[in-house]
Image 1: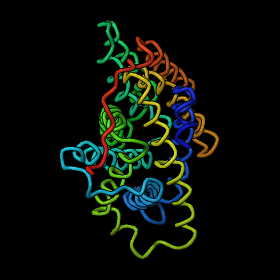
Image 2: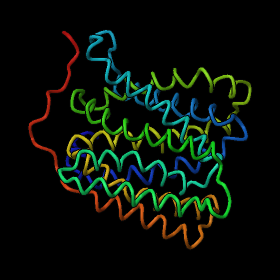
Image 3: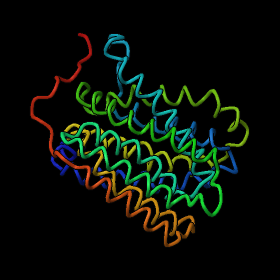
Length: 292
């Protein structure tokens, strides 16, 4: 699979990853009533971790702590991002949550841009978020917005750390280290919620959700980030709020209003306008190998 991913255009990997993420999020909503938000996060990350371990078969004991620090940190960040995101979509429409969450990668794209003018694009995205939440009509869920903002911080950190891990670990070894950590972190709050409520149907839905998010998209994003700058990757994520809005409308029946459509347009435009660079330089750090 790795040679195919290496040859595929980096932008195509990112687009497929975005579609998978939003479908996985929509499926996850169906688990909230059965095992709770935290339980859903734990089950999804646990099944995803098992998948990465079976694929990579990592020999954890052969890496030094210095080598393991980055993927362990990625696991902690991924756990927080997943919990915050699922908590947010439990309180707000999917498209609104992803638009708010997109402030994270957009800020990464702006900060790493070579132009100071790019710092204006997060402001345009913020206008879009205001149009999406429409606080002048009714006060949106304060907790939902707070969770979405936490997810935004997590998403920005995820991009930076994933690129670092992808540069230093071959294949999906880095994710095979990070995902078990994420599963362990979420177990503290998720396992008590899910305990006693997992049946065959919940397990099958959880497996489908885990394949769609994190197994497929995080693998694709890892390979894409090996060939894209953080700025270019953050810009590609600009279409994800629009994808989320579409899936929210078709799968979850969350129909947007006219101002919300304009808001999504502002967020997408801000992301596209933030692009300044494309492919990364060829000189990348060497991949980490287990100690022989």
